[in-house]
Length: 542
Ligand code: FAD
Ligand code: N01
Image (cartoon, rainbow, N blue to C red; front, side, top):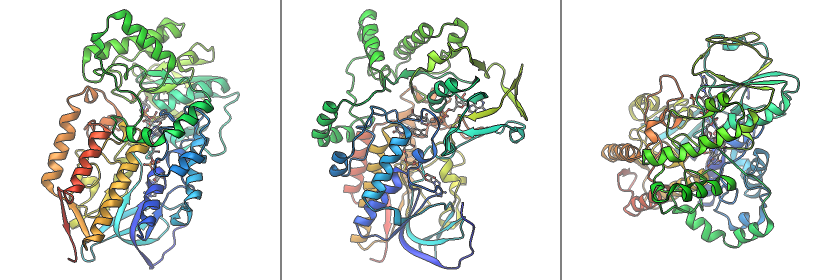
């Protein structure tokens, strides 16, 4: 972090963009192309966001690379060669750095700088943005590209700071890597980050203790090198593929199932599940039929297939049983993709500890203690996730009209219109904010859709000699109600997931993303724009 300097200089720009991940970079590119002056501010020392921070062993994407990539530049699509079906974090970071260089974006970004506050000044009608380096910006528009999974959280166990060994969070991993050879390691958390890193840490550590509160459903990735012929075919058909992804439910080229789980007899269904299990991938089981996420009985059939696989793989029946998720329907927490996760529990040097039954009560200088036992550890890995969707936004002191604080407005759950804007906060955009498909989708598809929509919006305002926008309270109320209503048609809200805010003690439980699907949502946003931004109040010089 840079040293704070006291500067009275205020830099004027049309748009301040906070964050230089996939969203912030594309926003900068679009704004420059449209002739807006802008400044991107990034807390990290490099571009990449998620892929800059999450460098833990095994970190990979769970959407196929040919879908999880920018679509805005056909030249970029053609020149970039993905090596694997699910590339590693270093490859993803290389790709994002390539984009930053290719489109000459670096000089538009101020690194090592955290935005601490953004206040809407009603006298000037502009955002006053201040940073931890003492810099100040005055902007007509503010775009929060701060990420849905960027606010890493370590649970505040008693004694958490007393540990004398090394401590890591998967979302803040050291750039130089970590060597666990010869160490007794404890990992807390069995979400996607834990499940990806556990097999690799186990292969290195003297002993690995996995502290599991809730088991997760994990599907084999079956990752591998991409066949050059397949890649050539994808490249030849990129425009069609992108068009499909943009109007799909999840923002990818996955084929939509036509049947319900109950429509196939057991043996046919099991054969289909088996074939898909062997092929691997995020939607292998939940994407086989179309009612898995809305019908409890259908869901239980899919869940039981995965539990059967866990029992087949894990030799100790008691450990297998502990690894079988039972508290929530499959797919209502983000499915995990793994390589040898369940197999890892057959290793002599791995112990699964049930911290649901006996919770962690304190961290000690040389380990930790659960309700029934102490564990001596040399290193602790927190794979404990993020204050998802709202944490990065409410972590900034954002104040709108009348000094209203966003964090206070959202105390009982986030309220937005379209997941893009919020009443009381004029000229403030959120990329993939709560109330948009966001984390339920291939996020690059959703990021591009939001960025393009924002770019069109600010151009429209400029072209119509308008200066300000703000959602109407009734439009926001209706949208919040719609997001909630659609969510409750599914099984999603029945799980204590981070989608619900359930992983953060004290956070209000509201289902935050929009389950209506990427395509439906895009058409709705386009329609709103075509109707001169219906649901917004527009004002300005004219
Ligand atoms: P981010 O990449 O989170 O970038 C936000 C940036 O804003 C960060 O660099 C942060 O430092 C910066 N920032 C935040 N607050 C401030 C502040 N106050 N001041 C200055 N800078 C700030 N999505 C998928 O679709 N498929 C996947 O397979 C997938 N895998 C993932 C794996 C991991 C380990 C994680 C954590 C997430 C994954 N995601 C995945 C979601 C992923 O976050 C998105 O795909 C995407 O990278 C988000 O890009 P972004 O630019 O919106 O946000
Ligand atoms: O975080 P998580 P994550 N005591 O919140 C446990 C994306 N992602 O970083 O379930 C004990 O999912 C917590 O337990 P519980 C993806 O969208 C993708 O793994 O709350 N345990 C849980 O097991 C993903 O969903 C990839 O009971 C505690 C774990 O910590 C999202 O990022 C890879 C605890 C946290 O799991 C977040 O994933 C990585 C406590 N006090 C991430 N507090 C891909 O594969 C928390 N836990 C692409």
